[in-house]
Length: 66
Image 1 (cartoon, rainbow, N blue to C red):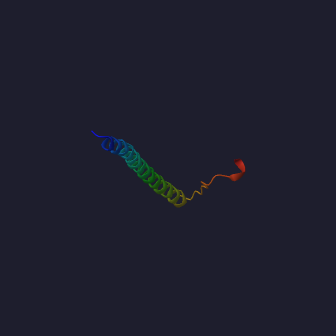
Image 2 (spheres, rainbow, N blue to C red):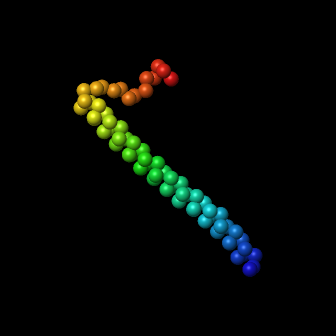
Image 3 (cartoon, helix red, strand yellow):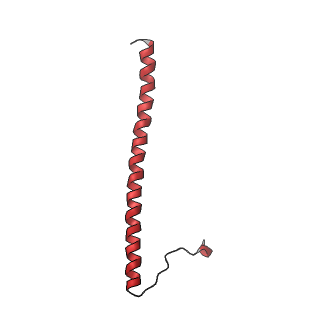
């Protein structure tokens, strides 16, 4: 292996490492977005059920308690 090939292969490895990290982060973000959407839908259904049952729940945190 000549010097230029060694330099090129040395630069390719970090690029592949970063690409793998970026792809993994994309997977994690997509998973979190899906979980967030699932929780939002469950919360919306819970609110609709509570209103239908005649109860009124304020699920927004009270800013004076913080």
